[in-house]
Length: 367
Image (tube, rainbow, N blue to C red; front, side):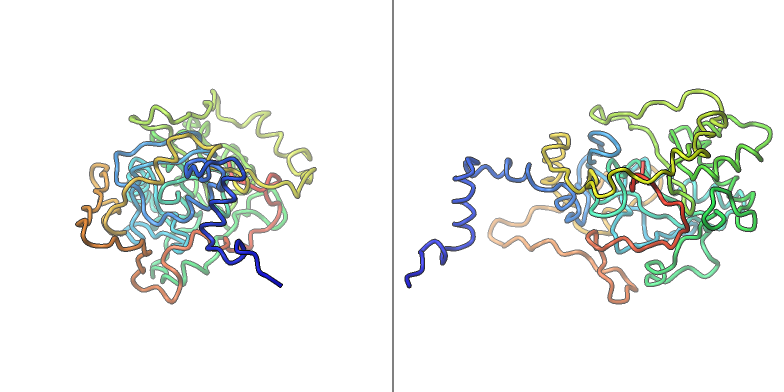
């Protein structure tokens, strides 16, 4: 039996033939446009070394010119470092550092920082629906311990829910005034537009906060968010293609809108639980056209060069181009000092189960 010459042809030849038959004409841009955006952005290990700019909306976009929050600071630690999600717009990273310092003055023992964004934003392979513009960050309701967590410990330690088991009510044995002060401090920054918390936590604040309650307007109830809170800042200057979110209106948010969360409606089972999440089907064609360019922008020379150094928001500097006569080395993810066999950057690793009690988010995603 004779073997067809096409069966023994190189893979690149077969791919070219398939593209031609599909009428793609060999266009690399059009092929990439059909690829899943989460795979392309999840493969990036470093930000782009250009001026910072966010493109699109919080749940459908990307950003350029990001910087990284160092994994360790005097008043913070980055949790789950293997996810490589400690990147953000310089304004967000600067705000997190400021909050960590100010919170210590308020009696909070340092921040445990969860996911911010991938190096160039975009949809993530697991976890969030938003966090795509470098303007969102998760902060645990647990303070930094006296003895900082090891790298391996940061991958395993679970965040602690503030709720009673299988309840919408806050557990008073866990909730403290210091946590309310932390939220008040974060909400007090003009850059912060909203902070997502579990409805039970919002109700606890509504029932207990006295004096100035104007900051409660920024505290927005949402599914999940019982072991961490989610800080979102607005579109930044220099990002004309960033789409802002609708404002939060007036009032403290403790009225009928909050009452809805304590009806049956928000907790009814999803009518279509098997429907794919938006991030799992989102292609590059669905993102702002600038996101194609963001993937091709140059990187800083190293992980360390892309970290935020404090002070004014920096712009990472691209590595000097290699001489034409020398081959360009492939991208290799740097290894974290002190890591215990875990990959330094693993955006493709499954998000660990947090062990947080029910109820879980009905829509299965973050705001």
